[in-house]
Length: 182
Image (cartoon, rainbow, N blue to C red; front, side, top):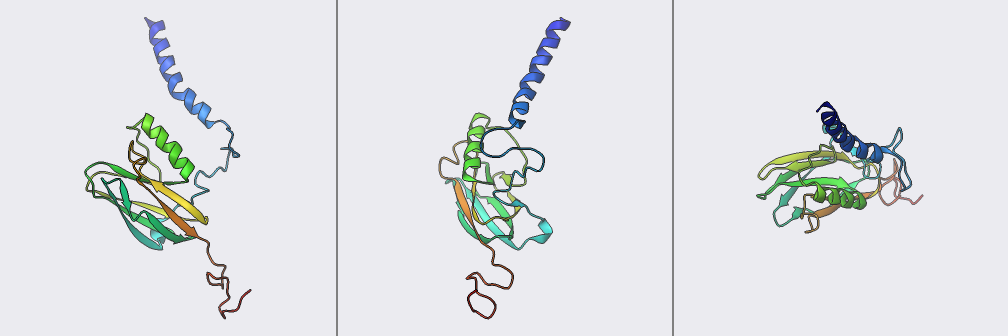
């Protein structure tokens, strides 16, 4: 009986930690996850709640939409997203690259009850409100979506356009304070 119990215990431990060990290794795709790896490098970084530049209200609804679903911010800007679920089912807002959101969505379809905490996301119960504070450090597109099964593929997604920050002493058109071109 002791041998059988040990085998079950060992099998359980192996089934939990083996996939984690494999996932932690290097993989193709042009980057490793060694020391110093920043998982948010392409989309920004968690913001500091006392250093918010602007607050943006976002509603999530059962028509599988975010309102608004397109936003514009400046590079370096820290945004407090106040995310309200006006629907009758759970919704979430997850920031990421389009590729990362798609991969995360596929994982959520396999494990729909998976719960996770991450500064780039918030899951909100019906009728409730949550917040994400995010600093957009890189110009380009940052996507967001609700990755609960069925929601993302139904169109519950949006994008943040991050505009390049002007150099100090220059406006957005590249002109100095006097208006002349450099």
